[in-house]
Each structure stands twice: as C-alpha cells, then as structure tokens.
Length: 104
Image 1 (cartoon, rainbow, N blue to C red):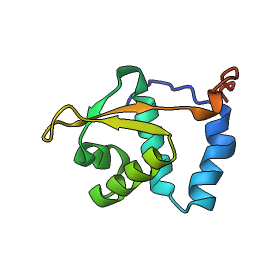
Image 2 (image 1 turned 30 degrees about the vertical axis):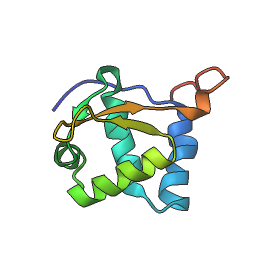
Image 3 (image 1 turned 180 degrees about the vertical axis):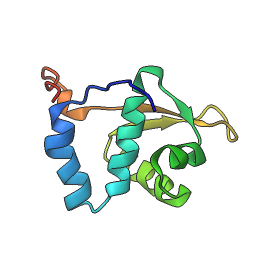
Image 4 (image 1 turned 45 degrees about the vertical axis):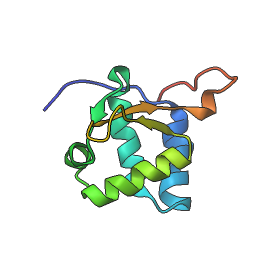
C-alpha cells in the first residue's frame, strides 16, 4: 500500500462526480478519470488492460469510459502508432479563464 497523497480540485468531487455518476450514469468514467488524474504529472502511457487493472473495471468498461471522457473534453488520448499504448492528458475545462479550484 502506498502512502502517496493526491490533491483533487473541489470541482471534481462537488460537481464532476455527480455529473458523471448521477446524470451520465457513468461511474466507470469517474473512476478512470481519477486513476488518470493520479498519474497526470507523468502523462502516462497505458493500455486499456492496464487501466482496467488499476481501476478494477473490465477492459470494455474502461474503453467506454475513455470514449465518454474524451467526448466530454475531460481527457485527451493520443497514440503515436497503432500498437502503442495510449498517452493520456487529463484536462480540467472548468479552469479555463479562471483560477484553479481549491482542493478539498
């Protein structure tokens, strides 16, 4: 078990969680977003299988979550080749033109 601590914008817990889980019925998307946000300082390269392992979700649930998060402009997945693992950039569109939201 790791003792690493993470800082999360209040918006993520106060608004985004309710939006993804309650409104969109995509709890898996919220889990994938949190998992990627925890690694965002490294812009991780992860396969869907690796993300599934990290989150405890099925590979298919992760695939659907990634598509949903990209459509919502919450992540930017990029690949350099057809067989390369995807690199994920975690986005925070609520920060555009404003100060970052304070963490919890």
